[in-house]
Image (cartoon, rainbow, N blue to C red):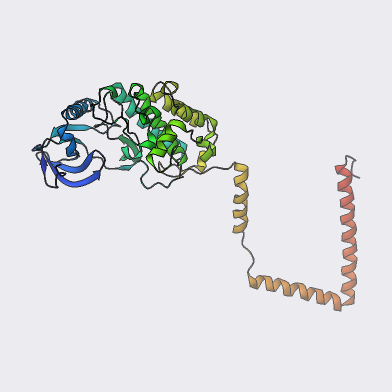
Length: 381
């Protein structure tokens, strides 16, 4: 088996490999420079083992031709397709400057619902454009969604890895595995290799699973071993999203549940329908968005009602009231003691204070009686 091409190699007499960018199950991705234009691109060189499969090579060439015709802002653009001198196929794509969808995100950290919906809607648009050309992605997952800074935002979506998807699953090469993809985001029909049931709704299941991850911080199916996860996908029922994020409510639960239905016929007719329904459910969430983070990759925080938020605000206000310093408190204590001593040792003043006290006590009792009488409904006199 041939080794992967080295940095500095020129592919197709056009693309000079500059540095490795990523590694994947299907091949290696490099940053390359166009020899004549000087522009940088991404080149994905498929594993040399594919070179011996004429049917697979023809299939990839067909998909590259189809994908180059899909011009959509949320789909990575395929620029070229060729083979090396040794017959190894490679794809040339636009070079993206961004980061994977949940790069660095902590498990259990959900996105603010509106920010999540903004991303989900863009993914749905990309999938819808591909589906219109008969292309099913079959490996939608966080690593295949890149967020690119655009127009002051950092959540412009680019869906990648369309170049090796199947334009139609039924026409796959004979020696191609029945089960391909990422277990956590596979639909049941894909996990079982039921080719007759695999279509655009298979991608909808993956999008619903990805939406679950964004809105809750957790994947709907997780078990470590792929076989365990696949068993859950086919036979298990995930917890409703509101189990992890109570503010989502039953509306979001219902949409996600339908999008992840075990039977593809019970899902929404297309990904646009799923995204629209999810948007309506999120619009209905009674959450004070002032308490939710605006950033696309920031965690959502449950916002308490205003009456509950007023209590800590009041406490903060009271904490700001200046308290008298030690010197002022000591001066007040000395003044009180001096007054008490004067009253005690001077009989005339003591009698005057006692008389004033009795007058004040009598006045207070009179006011108290009048207040009680008025409260009972009897006119005060």
